[in-house]
Amino acid sequence: MIFRQLFEPETSTYSYLLGCERSRRAVLIDPVASEVDGYIQLLQALNLKLIYTLETHVHADHITGAGLLRNTLGSKSIVHRDAGAMCADLLVTDGVLLQVGELEFAVLHTPGHTAGCVSYAMADRVFTGDALLIGGSGRTDFQQGDAGQLYDSITGKLFILPPDTLVYPGHDYQGNTVSTIKQEMVKNARLGGGKSRDEFIATMQDLKLAYPKFIDQALPANQSCGLAAE
Image (cartoon, rainbow, N blue to C red):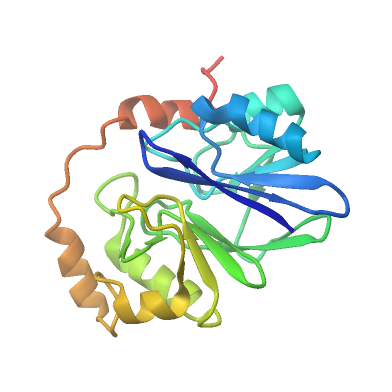
């Protein structure tokens, strides 16, 4: 497997390129519009054909590159059916299996940060978007957020994965790149160490976070796959 973890510094967003060495087919998880030229150069350098862009949710902090990549490379955009992005080529639900060459991804519906959040699980790793972060979690105070639902998603869908499963989040603001399910179950400040659902909800209610800087531009753009609405 070919694997690259890519970082967009303005919004501290991680995107992920995964390619099948045999078929040379690839996917990009959570591509950022401003980075599209770099993705295309990387795909060319690695001799990979982009088949899918996989969105973990409709983002409020950056504009997706899915539409630009579809127009340029012919890739297909994938989001959850509840994400609010009917522009996508494939609307998935919980339990769907996506096959790209020898790569297989299981779609796990992990709502709570937004209604349409998903994580993409492979045999040894999971891409958790803004649901489970390293040492934390996504916020739940806008965009159909629900703290109790997020707790249920993380504990019921992610914390049941094998303990040594690698956790690759959608963001990190401290320079962390990867964790494990075991580490998050033990050390996660918001819900590790056996914290209860009520404790998590209380923690999230007390955060008092600032209004998302780019939400007014990002949400409508991402509901059109990153392209201006026709």
